[in-house]
Length: 519
Image (cartoon, rainbow, N blue to C red; front, side):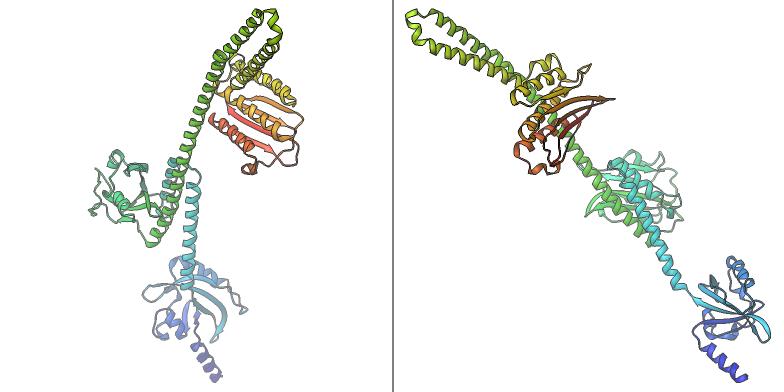
């Protein structure tokens, strides 16, 4: 019996697992691995000590409950994870597995401890990484919600100051560099007192902490605002604090800086800096995108204004040419016709037969030329567009178009009261005529409809045919005149601040050209 016990003891003491036997909470046996785990050089140093000396108060209730739940059938209880205090009160994370048994005739508990410190460290790193990813996702979602620069920078500052690590105690500012002057300007701020000098005048590049971060393009950290000579912009009543100045840059181009003001007790760890650097990178990209969008939007607006101006100039030139044709060419043709008729009546009878045919042909030619000039004048600038409005002009053009190309055109809608502005009427009329011209050239249609609809404050012009259709996405591959026609219509609509689109499919009946503008 004694031999078996010695063999068992030898086996247990050679195991790498930390094993202890507890009786009424006292340690009655430990193997060397357990002694080492608890920070002792000898197993005898632990004998007789209470296990509760090594259990932190916050875990005592958990362990007591675990011991009470142990069954008397020598079944192993599910393991629990707790923290123990090693010799010298150094904490260590362990997994505890227990099993009830009888030791020297008395009830006891066999406890096996597994050092899980490394695993806990990895879990904490994973947890911290998940927190960082969640923060990055929140920042990305917020700063990407808008392409408007002011909204983007304000959202970014709110997200950074609202990070859990700051516990609602962070304040800050965001400065951007003016793209034309390269001077700093205050774009957003939170928690800055009225006495703060940066509210009245932004620092220069290289000045104070924020200007230094922009100048160097590197993060600037101040552990104490009073002791740091770089912090030159102090104000009356300024609390002692820490500063983190994050340069906002994309591919080496510095766009601005975000300043985070923290309580003097805040611990700035490398993990905090790493997270803030990643956040700053995301914010920088969002700011760059917002600026690019603003530049494109400005160019689009400039093109729209230019397009509107070109349309006005075009209409003015059309009106001038029509007036010139009426006042000069038209009057001259009328005078020429009158003169030919006078000549015809003045020729002696014995000479009439020789020139009468030429005179009649000349009179007919003058009449045909006069009619052609009238058509050109109407195409250049229908006079009824000025006198009677858009709908009357569309009906007139529909009749003229139908008689000229043999395609029935139905015009639907009522004249608008009050009338639309002259540039709007001009543009809608030109879009309708260009669309009908495309129908006649390409659609192989049997009829077309022009409709003017009003819904609340939205005005909608629809030109529809029953032709063969096409794929609008392949606009670049269409015939030159058809592609340019659609592009011209779109530009006219956009010049009015409206929308233009085409609904059509190849091998399907019909195409709809739609223009929408706000009255």
